[in-house]
Image (tube, rainbow, N blue to C red; front, side):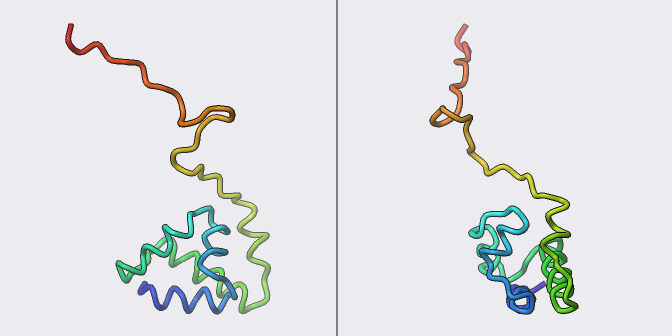
Amino acid sequence: MPYSEFLAELERASLSVRSFAGLIGMNPNSITNYAGRGEVPQHIALVAVLVAEMAARGFDYRNAIAKVAPTKKPRGATRPGHFGGDRQASLDLLS
């Protein structure tokens, strides 16, 4: 789907790119990066079209999406109380 059509679907659902990204558990920058490509992947476009259609028909799409509860962890996340994750064990490659 062309990015411009994707934005039109979000507008139809009264969503910004940021709120749509939060809804599906993605980083807003990841969504906006598709503008440079000019196309949105099919799975993201499908969600946008379904959300827009549900909104147009008066259905609460937020409750439907909450049943799936996006659980994607951001890359680079560390354990609580640790900065920068765990150190890697050194590899003894010279022996």
